[in-house]
Amino acid sequence: MVISAGKGKILTARGSVMAFKAVAEQTSGDFSLMERTLPPGGRRPLPHRHATCSEAFFVLAGTVAFVLDDSELSGQQGDFLLVPRGAAHTFGNGGAEPARLLVLHAPAMDAYFAELDELWSKQSPPTPDEERALMSRYGMEPA
Image 1 (spheres, rainbow, N blue to C red):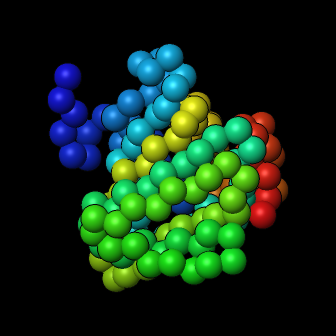
Image 2 (spheres, helix red, strand yellow):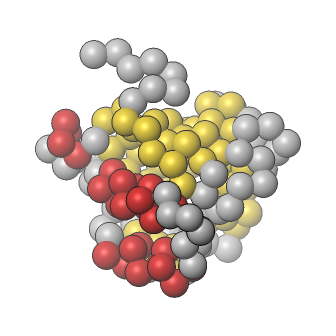
């Protein structure tokens, strides 16, 4: 099945839209893949480390600001960043226009994002402590 740009299992959090192209159910848990659209000025994920997961980013459009360990990096269309297990990181839109990127998690992390979507669907945004508690359940540690 071909999944068009912006389509798939749609989830939202922090103002960004995540269109999952592949989820754990389809990949036997090996990986999940999402197309993520980041709004300008949107809230970044809390800096964190994955204890059990590698993460990779491929910038499709716009400018994405990454923090990887102690390095601040800027990704443009066509750029790739691998975040190895245990590396501290966060990211956000580094420009004035929406940014789009592909995000791969291995093994799959789509269940975390489904819960994150629920957390952000409440009347008021979650507190950082609520986000940290959710992250902890999925093997993520504060950086």
